[in-house]
Length: 490
Image 1 (cartoon, rainbow, N blue to C red):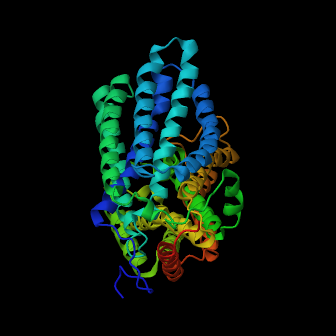
Image 2: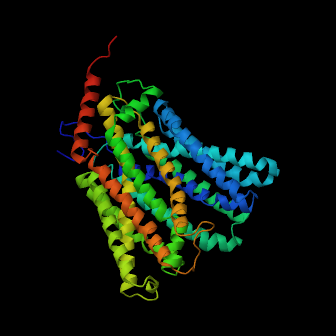
Image 3: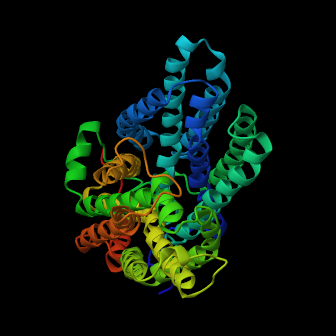
């Protein structure tokens, strides 16, 4: 039996490598817009003149709106069926909406009378959320049609991991080391140039992603294809309530998201590098140093997933990330952290770099693996109930991602308030007290370990391993073949 053939003799739906690589750019396109919006508070307060309190309130309130749009857009995706496919039209629509919202938000808001700026900014941010959800939900949902081969689905994580590691690492360097210097800070010319690059590149990436999914975005690849099982909006809750693998994967993905959101929070980075290690500039250098090892870990993790299944790779990488950070905690309590410096390549520096790189590399891998695992969960629902609802499955995960990531700032704020920082956050260069020492270790490495423990517990009850997914794909292929041979009832 070849890697493209099931036990029953049916052929897997396989994709060419370039199709997987091109389609992965759809996620990178939406992440480009996420990157652009990372700096929106500087525009809103520094250029448009909105207050910090107002901007913070808007961004928090938009999380609620974001959550409301997810199931609606998921339902639209599931019901969409056109001569141009299910996913391609919505990917393009989403990208056009994103480009429009960013152009209007950054170029019109500050030119309006002050009394109109508030409402206009809200409307444009809401428009951005709608476009983002349309396009990013297609990334998750279209995994089901791209390929159902257990050997191929993990490959998406390789491309996605490479693209986004380069985007966020090099993008931050580009803004901080080039644009800020060129334009003298976060000024309007900086936003104009940054947004121009972002919109053009994201548009090109979307076009390539549409090309990648073009041959697969057809009804023959939608669930059971010939069997039209009707699904109403009110059917979603019973479906989701009865899908245990989906529930467990949501918990695992959510805890992973929270750990990374806390670890990468700007305040935690200041506490770790600017206070504990007493060298905040080291944070940028370290982020560049770990790019190559992180990509290597991604390649190894995906190779392992292709041999054993996505679940085993997810669990193994989570264990390795957790062990690395546990050892790093012990290591930091046995040395003087201020001796960690690239100008002093002793045991302290080498040990920190190795353990930090392993923890970040293996700890980040599950987030990339989750996307093709969502396709497995969607296929399980098709196998169990006959319903093909990849849009709803994708937006459930999008909603949880956004909800959990929004909790990270509150968690960090509450944690530092416990050690006396009630009016302001810890600042670079502050004296390292025992309380600050302990809380820095807890937020940077303790929270990730706790999150990964929760993730591993959830994976204990996640049944869709490599062997089960082979059986599920075999069963779906049998039903589709039978539907082709049996004439429809009249």
